[in-house]
Length: 199
Image (cartoon, rainbow, N blue to C red; front, side, top):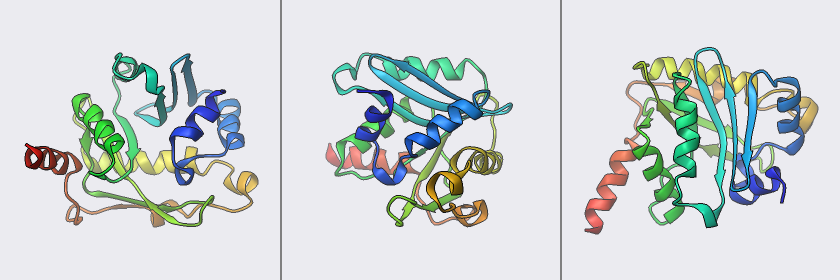
């Protein structure tokens, strides 16, 4: 199974870029967009001068629990820049969702509670809301993370979208919002509360 098939199998259709989109990024933005691939993992990420964005990280089911995910994150942390990624809202009925969030919590990621992020999928035409997690070695605040997310959205997510998909993604200001008073709970607090209730 090639790297794209592995990602497609693991990520929901509304979160997947097309193979053409990813190959174009690797070819035409090869100084920014990278693929780190091994027998048991695929990591797609973008490195900008002031931050990193994890686009997709996949670790094969049979090799989970062997520290592969931790090693991949450690490798990125060594670059000493904030790391940003998107996750689906927490679903306590989905054990994968819990495991994924626990992993990022252990790795020291925080939930950017004040950033709202909803974009329409070109594959399904449905609005898809995601949450932003970030790790910062230099104490970036959420507003700075928001500015970096906007740059990533325009440089990576919407790269040549019309040419590739025959239609465009929404403009960045429709997709990303910043609000100190956003009505959202910290995803990790919710996770901890669920764990407490289970005890």
